[in-house]
Length: 209
Ligand SMILES: Cc1cc2nc3c(=O)[nH]c(=O)nc-3n(C[C@H](O)[C@H](O)[C@H](O)COP(=O)(O)O)c2cc1C
Image (cartoon, rainbow, N blue to C red; front, side, top):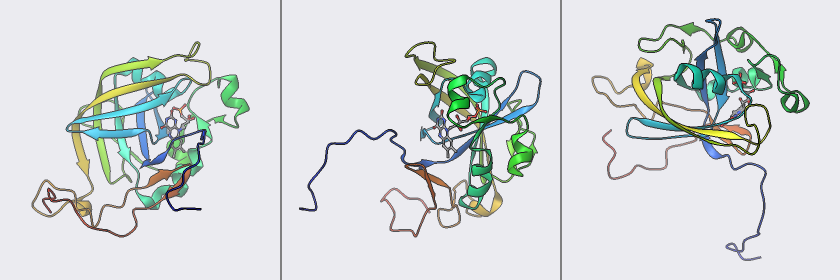
């Protein structure tokens, strides 16, 4: 077989290595929910995310129009996986229950993570996350297959404006506004496996640090 030979495949998911984001949102009763997710990319002060229908985080985000995007560190993979099979939604949609999920009202306690207050949004930040982006929703597009709020398959693509960036002091280049790529170690999701950042291979001509 030649190195560049290809196969035509139909993979069930396309998580090609995106950061693990823990989205915090405010529930209707004032408590907080954590939604682990990885369909996220950024440009300028905007982050675009994708969320499946039927989740509590999506319901909260569409109601409150704000959230915090907490970027998980690679050291947090076990905490993330503790809350992975759970949902803040009660009762759970049938398809989600059948997929092995259970309801969890307090994901902070289950994960062993700590909430701290935000400045511009009502949802709390996650203290352990090295980057915490307070954000508000600017647009969303839903892709229903049926009634996407309750049926597996539907999803929403949401554009968020980042209002305030909190960064752990040890990932900031001292005296600058820059994240230090040598100390920032995000957690990535690679076809449903957790991976770390690995070694630095080089930098682009536009790098400022
Ligand atoms: C690492 C990781 C990445 C995930 N990525 C996404 C994603 O990008 N979009 C999504 O809708 N669900 C994603 N999920 C699944 C949600 O976390 C799951 O549906 C969860 O029940 C949502 O919680 P909630 O109902 O309390 O919001 C991911 C889960 C894990 C553990």
